[in-house]
Amino acid sequence: MAKRTTAHYLLEGLVELGIEYVFANLGTDHAPIIEELARWKQAGRRAPQFVLCPHENVAIHMAGGYALATGRGQAVLVHVDVGTGNAAAGMHNLQRNRLPVLAMAGRAPATSRGELVGTRDAYVHYMQDVRDMASIVRPYTKWEHSLDSGMVAKEMLRRAHTVMQSDPPGPVYLNLPREALAAEWDDAAVAAFPAEKYGAYRAGGADPETIGRVADKLVAAERPLLVTAYAGRQHEAPATIDALARLAGIRVFESSPHHLNIDRESPCFGGYSPVAELAHADVGLMVDVDVPWILRDQRENPATWWAQIDVDTIKKDIPSWDFPADLRIQGASARILAQLVEAVQARMTDATRQRAQRRIESWAAANAARGEAAAKAAADRGKKGALSAAYVCAEVGRAIDPDAILLNEAIRNMLVVQAQIPRTRPGTYIGTAGGGLGGSGGVALGVKLARPDRTVVQILGDGSFYFSTPLSVYAAAKQYGLPIFTVVLDNSGWEAVKSATLRVYPEGAAKSSGEYQSVLAREIDFHKVAEACGAQAECVDEPDALSAAIGRCLEAVRSGRAAVLVARIAPH
Image (cartoon, rainbow, N blue to C red; front, side, top):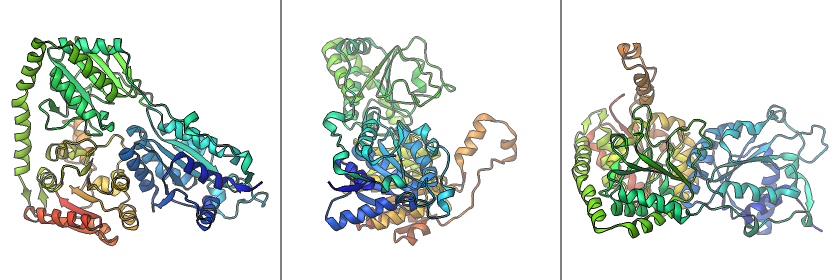
């Protein structure tokens, strides 16, 4: 009977799960895995492709981007506690985006005198042996475990995969002790765990009675509204939301959207905040949304009847969540909304259809005003050294095609990006769900890996660019042929810090003195980082130079090179 190492069964188990990529930042703890990869290559066996990432921030977010684009979670391999720490902000983002990723970290050896293969053989093995390593990321995981025996390697991998892919999906964490990876086992001792018997749970629709209750409310409503953020993770959802809205005359708002949830040229699309409508709504739907509005700014109308439709109704990972709902329906929102379309259709009369149509027609003026405001903002190009962010985004929007995938991590200019680059097709918009800034670079690479035929455009501020470990982003882009287009809106500081201070202390000492502790170094040549990695590098501080610079960047992307454009916008 053949004896093989736990590392062998780990790789074999990943293949059986359908894992295509391991986004890796390797260390001394991974020697048994590296040895097995070499053996597999010599034997002509196919292992998952290891994508080497110079920093864990890139690895964890690349896996997230790939999962976001495909729905298929991949693996990440990092180095003991320090690698786990570097990946922690990314794990936060994965959790908040509900993205399935199998994060694995090696663990320092436990033996010191050569008792086992893989025993301590370096100074750092003492330093990296820490108490409760998993606690670094435990708040962000659905499941975590330690692979202490190769006999259960495939069982633990299947369990991890099933948990991460089950609705609502999310990241899991598995640590891998070095001696355990090096231990050998008989083939017959290591069982397989096929998806047919041990696979993930998928959320479905709702029962007809529940659907009927919501449909009755919508048909009778005078001022219904719908608020969503991530229904569009299911690519059939935007068209279904639009169909339901047009049928029942529902005003649709996206609140801090993570995805495109409705064609933003739909007559039913009302913008990015429902606050102005909350006091008047008689029926409201919260559909796949974590923060439908800010309660400090607007309390709900007690007379509004609310239904919550969500893959995650209780928000178990948000300690305080106090938005009201008369009816909560957990399931796949795209399926539930499709059921609602059928139920509402069956209940509509000529009178209710006409009433719904009149509502839709009444929104035309507000929609036109929103478009005119965006056009007016874009027409102000700014001046030398202080370009208008709206102008920059509008020029990018004009240059990219409707199928380009836009990643928005512009934070204080997030609404500007949304207004100036309106997306209309499912899967073409990715927002920011978590608070771990600097993730969009790695996410963009993961999306590009999954969708090589699409143009991937990342827009972020200079503050987020610092966090993104940019040298690692563009080094990986070069090594693996992943040309992404990055636009940095450089206002030389943390506008969000200043704005937060003013919200809390609108007439305080910080305002009177102009001291917000938010100004960073001026005129940093961020684009030179990209240039060092062979990417197209552009810096624009003149409005007249912008269009040509964007054109050169997109041409570079089409030729297979990444591109970074730094736009000097007005300092904050």
